[in-house]
Length: 389
Ligand code: MG
Image 1 (cartoon, rainbow, N blue to C red):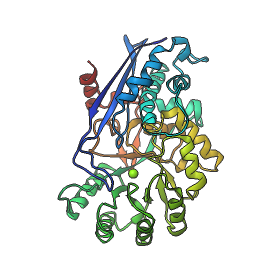
Image 2: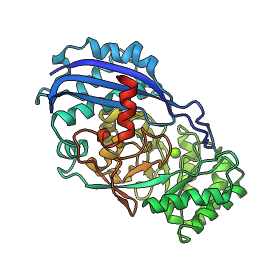
Image 3: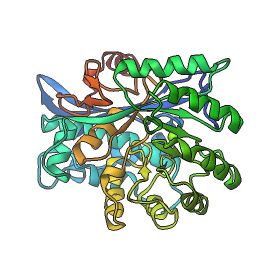
Image 4: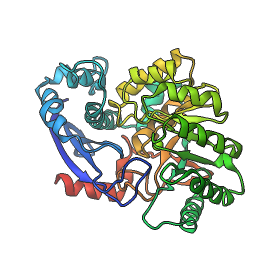
């Protein structure tokens, strides 16, 4: 078996939302389609990959460095030594040849896009949904048929008032979510507290069904001021209070804030994840790790991240990846993570799960088709068709 074509394009996911740090008016993603010479149901097996939202398209790095290395590799270099299939680990080493250690950033996004497409292919060649394949190869042997998902929204829109925020959250409850997340830090503390209380009011007064996300905006004093104000509400978690690399801030916050903290979506390597666990004061009995495999060198690297977590005494259940995409959902169900983010209605059609997937009590069914499950999303497949054909 061999790769016969790799196509790469940039697609827009621009919108008028913003969080405490960025707006999404220019947001885009890289998309790849990898075609093999393996035939299933009379057609070549193809794999798709894209980066999840919040980081821009990485076509330059892919065209200049990552994809030429992959194209130059011989079929034998990419073949799984034990199976007639691609080997994403060998592909990863080839993509990362002549790259210095450290500085994990945009390069990790470029590799993650390709890694997603390779795993889509591997599972399709084995004729299994990715979550089943992952459970068999790297998990307990049994994938979970559903995964916990929560609705991430509550962005700052132009002119959005509290009634509109409540209406948005009621919409998520009507879809079958019982846990939601909203942005904080884009308004003064007193205003954010009014927004938080308004959302808790429609969650039957239960703060444990609401997570809040500051998107790394706060300095230490502001992070602590919010911590003191938030603690009485018993929130699901308090996310990314300070800069993603400010482990001392996170550790100090953990001494003050009793409820769960969450962070990690902007750490893009197992080494950065390990530093968070070593120096960030994160607590394995309650805190949440949000590393996003699509932004951080893909699943090959995510397996390394899970390994350093295990060494540090962390359960995979503490992981709820950022991103709201099917790739992380498959990993969550296959490897026993705590769940996955969801962005109903935004970042579509890349974000979101199977069109007909039942969702109730904040759990969503995994797709039954081979691969990551992209073929269960009509609008995504339409877009792939327009981008590549
Ligand atoms: Mg976040």
